[in-house]
Length: 411
Image 1 (cartoon, rainbow, N blue to C red):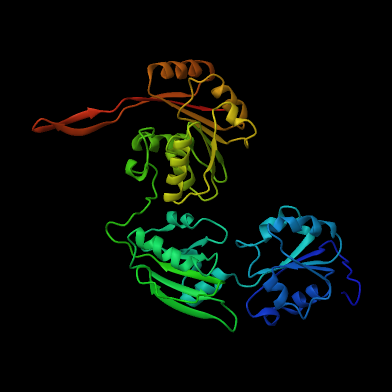
Image 2 (image 1 turned 45 degrees about the horizontal axis):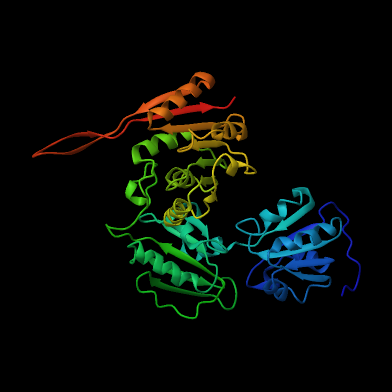
């Protein structure tokens, strides 16, 4: 219960206070006062306990999901509210979610060093040269895209089982000699730092609050996702419904992904185009539309195996399956140009300035593209690939079926 009323005299009624394992001892006098004067203090149970001696107002532990607490925070607009968060609230923390409904001029944020900053300081690693990944509440496979030879990675764990699961993943990808450092409860009295290799991971009784520092050592046969578009076809599980490597590289170039943009991949198949779109930048998003359940499942497995489990898959038949989806910045039609209404629905949903790319192999679909080209303009390109193959005792060129690609930008 409060001993005195909390008064917010300025527009910044909300305080977001980063708190570390050292608890209130690491807080500034301003942070201490903001917590003391708050009418409502919100945070995880561990954070509320760390600041227990300061809190005079009502306590609210984050529910699950934490968004259920947001209406209560909003009801206190204009009155003093404090939110306790780990380290730097705006680095993979709750700050992003709070800023979605509270304007920046309504809150003050007092961060502490993030787990990444503390881990980098313990390891002696320059943060600008390190890949920063969170596995908290996210699929472990999301780290696969970062597994490059010689890479240094800092990963926030989900729980005490994460380090061992990660060691198994690294070993499966033939990176068993990778050096792993588990940094537990950094900045507090329980801090502990231990080392192991992925293939000989023998660390026990790991604390749930831990960060993993990874130094990748890859064998010659290691499974590595290259950084360039046009992955080898063998990276994908497929039933033949696959945009082949060379055509896929050109298709990605034509789609021209830009930061934060959303792709619709209509006729997802094995998911290769949508997956490669997502691999270009972590801010990109993709929705794949696929009528067949077996292919939708196959695409989901490919996305997880290649480190982009965030691929959203809608199982259904276009154009009906497109209804209600977030409007795209780019559309790829790998299958469905012959289906009535698919192009019209996609073109209508596409944002102004967005790109639409359609590939055709059959003469009938090619004719449909030619008609759209005459109507809407853009570029019509014929792609032809030939591969060397045995011809008796010698070698010769064996051409693949040509692909016609239509590229058009919406005015």
